[in-house]
Image (cartoon, rainbow, N blue to C red; front, side, top):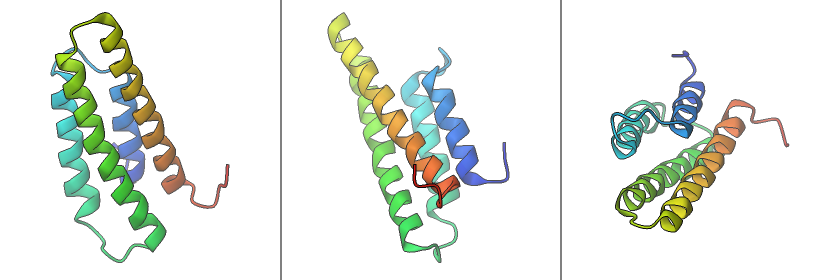
Length: 109
């Protein structure tokens, strides 16, 4: 793992893009949420407002990702499973964009 917590977060998110079969995706996401809360939400309260805002948004997206994974687990039809997988991919893409912005705040692309 990196010494930069935002790089760590990005690496952890990338591992979720092709999750290991065990533990289940919901367990992997819950572990990520716990790490995020312990590592990023509880440290350094003197962040710039824009950085703090992104962390709040990431926290929200991680909670939604956990919900998406729970819905995927209960999906019965292939069509519903495919939709849930797409929602998870979209959410991971959004989270990676937030990480990119935290890692490169001056890059306006």
